[in-house]
Image (cartoon, rainbow over all chains, first blue to last red; front, side, top):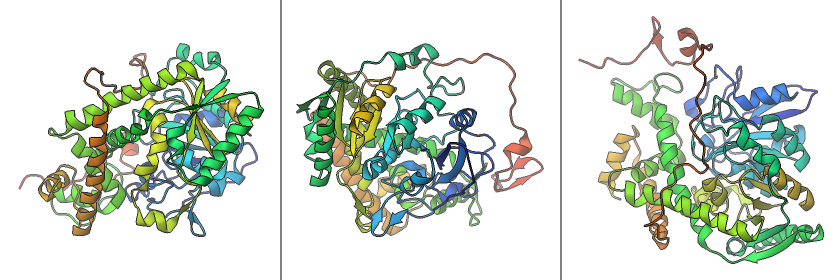
Length: 388
Length: 93
């Protein structure tokens, strides 16, 4: 694990390695950026420091944050015995919060497996200035903590408009965060429960019981439309990743191969020698979805399905205040199983894609994920307190 | 998807795969193609595409002078430079 640990006496955070810092490498878990040091720090880092937080260290991520739980990192997977656990679980006892870039749901999976609390905020409420761009239309800075209060404290430190981020909400829009509706009625998406194992179903049942005990009405929703969010998400994620990673060419920064004579060899060998197998697959698939032959049939279709998913959520929110679904299909991942099924993340996206593709906020707590209308971030944390 | 298309994709993306990686990519594409096909279950003929999830307007900054980085700073992370330029192999023989 790549971790530079510093002493700190004030409230402290760990940052995942997709968030730029100065005087410390930011690698994105890739050989391509093994020794890369940024000239500037991410806006979230600046804001955390202004709020009195210290940065205790940086933690490992899967290459460009698109895998299951960091297993594709050039610096190695973080395991505990036979289980793939990811870096967050290893540092949570030492920090008040872990700040990461939720590219493909890794933080939500980690929170689900280890009963941490994770907030994936409404897209555009936290600045992405200084985060390594991978899936720009959907990724958000997310916060994981031991409890909802720890998460809310860190979220309040980083939320807000930032002129430097073109997708940052204006101040007047952010007022909606304080005006969101309280979550009194939650709908359980049963179609997703059917795709999870018994241990996850148990966690969901326990969460439902806790919500009911705290006065929240819980109903079942039978609707299968959102199951297809994963299919559209895998297309959009791959296409955007392909475009964003085209900048890594071995010229201005990052890895440069020693094996070249021509400029084409320099580009090709630098990229081929430094990108991992998983990322190469995603780049090629993303490129294919954007080809002349497939653009309308695949990429354009996925963009239209994204709207269908947004409208589906809006329809559901007519009858409930939030929806509940698992964040993972199981409660642990064996490292051998993940090695044997290298693209398991594309399957597990079933649970994380609905919120990713729509930009809606989620709170993951006690092994379940709750999705609510945009700007319900604080209300989701209120709900998380009821589950705790 | 076949090896000809895969070869074109590798060239486009400046990647070179081993034979083993090529086989793996072809299997990966087969899974993804099945996912794409499944989307036909949703009728999107009258649905507008959605590039951005929320109505975020273009943010315009005030046109004022700000501190930027010097050439030396920007080239600090470069693999190879010479006389303030990024060094690349000869492009024209």
